[in-house]
Amino acid sequence: MRPLRVLTWHVHGNYLLYLSQARVEFYLPVAPGRPGFGGRGHTFPFADHVHDIPAEAVRDLDFDCILFQTRRNYLEDQYEILTEKQRSLPRIYLEHDPPQEHPTDTRHLVDDPDTLLVHVTPFNALMWDSGRTPVRVIEHGVFVPEDARYTGELARGIVVVNHLRRRGRRLGADVFDQVREQVPLDLVGMDAESLGGLGEVRPSELAKFAARYRFFFNPIRYTSLGLAVIEAMMIGLPIIGLATTEMATVIEQGISGFLSTSVEQLIAPMHDLLADVDAARRLGQQARRVALERFSIERFAQEWEDAFSTIVGRVPRVPTMIAPGFGACP
Image (cartoon, rainbow, N blue to C red):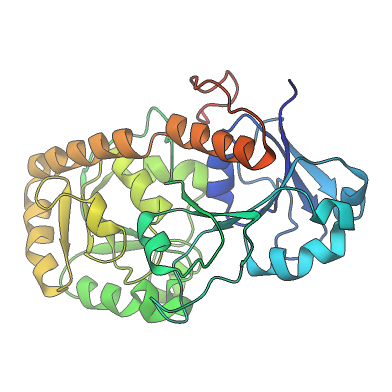
């Protein structure tokens, strides 16, 4: 039986890399200068089952499923590059975020009993009003290079957020400013320099770069559970952050890190970890244990394979380990 053929867009590179661990043929439309139409690109080590396809040639291919990931994909792109027959194919909408207009009373734009709506955290599924659209939660799965393991020799905290200055309070720009007045922190990510940060670190290098820091600080008030947090856990960093959204179910207080809705209450444990690398290492080991149990790439790939098979009407495959060539990047 041939692999399923799925059309999707390149929206979040890290997520797409992890999604591509599923045994599915992915097709990415390419149109220069158009958001989401960048194809494979050159940043991530996608395997050969992830294909670029010129946007104008999409209508000439046979797909089994369409995977939408943004409002633009759903409201505009599909009508511009898909045929009427392709638009009637089995479809999944992958929602990456919690609702931003109103936290509890926002109706999701997809209102279709024939579309599967996939949320990436139970918190997101709880907060969205998904109406009559069937919902499934597929929690993140990640991997990090085998040689990216916690050392903690830098007595500083690391913060990983893209465009923190532009994204403001929701992503915790003010929280970051408040904390760094009392604790040494390094900010990395796109445009980090505008806030006195170090700038962007290539995705392939970020895990080893972060492993040197004493702890990982997540200043974000309200967004989905960040892949950067889970990757830091997988490396073995202790996590300090706000006790909001899905974070509250992931970090065990005083065991794998520290959470609070009071920013001031986070300062003391930060100083404690800066003074005691062995205590930080013990917390990080527990964070890695949670990440391995809850966010394994094998579980993630299997659940996505099952979702694709279910929506297409194919019997799901028997669970197996990740096939050769589909595992973690070197």
